[in-house]
Amino acid sequence: MDNQLRSEVEGAFIRSLIKYLEDGEKPSAFFFRQESRRASKKIIKSVRNDSGDIVTNDNDISYVFHNFYSNLFSRELHVNHNLQNDFIKCLKQTVDPIDKDDLDRPITLEEVNAALVSTSNNKSPGIDGIPYEFYRKFFNVIGNDLTNVYNKIFSVGTLSVSQRTAVISLIPKKGDLENPKNWRPISLLNTD
Image (cartoon, rainbow, N blue to C red; front, top):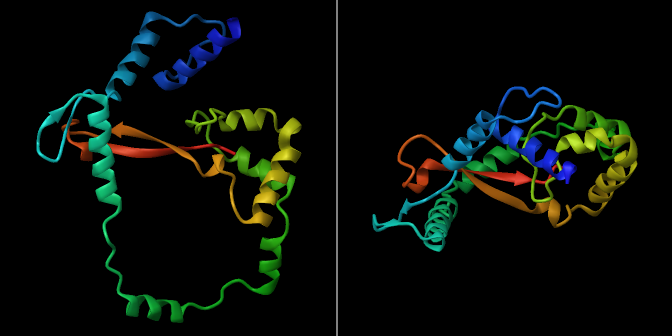
């Protein structure tokens, strides 16, 4: 029970963006108000549909956003294929055979560790809930397995389903939040 409470407090701490909390210090009412205030800004209570009507039902809100982003991201691109082909013809091979061999060799434990060390703290994890900090903290235990996974991906040429799955969260922008264009989608990907 203590571990679960600690985990919930740590999650609330990260979400509230409080700069510090002394070790062992109990969260204050201010702390929980900060998190509550941040969370309430992300709740979509109503949105305007294409007809200009305000909808408040969760299913209707989902439908409005689905339509908005489907239309936004499915617009037909007008590509000038002649220009595209001319551009491709101008490209020169830039990777010499020695560099190619270096790039094609298996990924090393040291490279995986260096990549993890370069990641930032307090980034939202994907659907599995595992942040970069976990992989860094337990790298001595899971580093070899993680490296093997990456090399398998490299040899097979595809990521696992969970590594290709994102949770999309809408972040409010400035302006009228009943307008779907004032919400920015971000993809939360698993950190592995």
